[in-house]
Image (cartoon, rainbow, N blue to C red; front, top):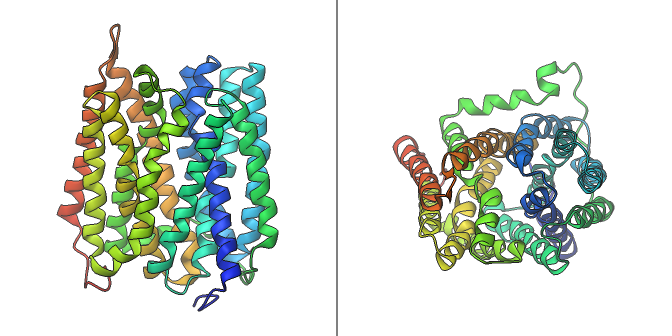
Length: 401
């Protein structure tokens, strides 16, 4: 049962603003991270720094998702996590600027990641609880996160902080704004406390029972598999841009959010007309095409590949979020979204950052990186996910899928 059957305009505006600010805060740190590490002589920890987000997603989203389902209002959980994220990104940026030991910096990045990993799933839970029809309403609201991401990218480039620790300080201030903004959100009822919980339930691992449903299982696995080649997008596209003569890489990377934003607003209409299967297939097809374009090895084709990022992301990852909201009982909502974060940002990204880092090393020699080989390898991996989904997913009726 949803908290509201209708949503007032003022409350709608507050939820839109939440995603807008949160998207900006996330982009201000994640997008320029490669440049910041490289500029401070920390390029050797770059794959591990991104993998830290994947490792964190195995731990904290389910724990805090279980807390939001059973003990504490999701709004209070979001507030505490946003504040902790602001503190940690400040500490990490200061450590990088001060030239601390690379492995100590990496450890701090891991602590930061543990704080940041649950944020998007918790805020999504808050918003889903307010919507009468998530299929129609969630896409445009989630699009504000994408718009915020673009604003964050533009802000960092405008500040000239694409390779500066000022990016982290800007992100910290924005996360503090998110924490403060939660005081103005429409209240959600605090879940009744559940007594005599097992350790497995307290850690949120009982959410794994959702995988017993074959429809759920295929969607979760598809998301995890696609996250592996997708993980190469942010660490390796900006360096290639710089090699091709493109500066202000954070701003150029925001081209991917243009199609993402378009996709968010179009998703409701697609879900009303198409089976879920074909929407996901559409996204998987664009994932293949995106890396094929990058492999063309020119400035224009690389930007075309970046532009297709949103077209590959939205039909798979956002559709999966809506699917879970509609197919999973409300009492499991936060844990279901947290489990999706685990398989995407956790399993998929962890394997992705490590494996694509190894693939990049294999494609790099004394003469430089063989970029067409690198990008084509990612295209093949994306094609493999498409083949898996087409072979395994069956779905049920049009309405259910």
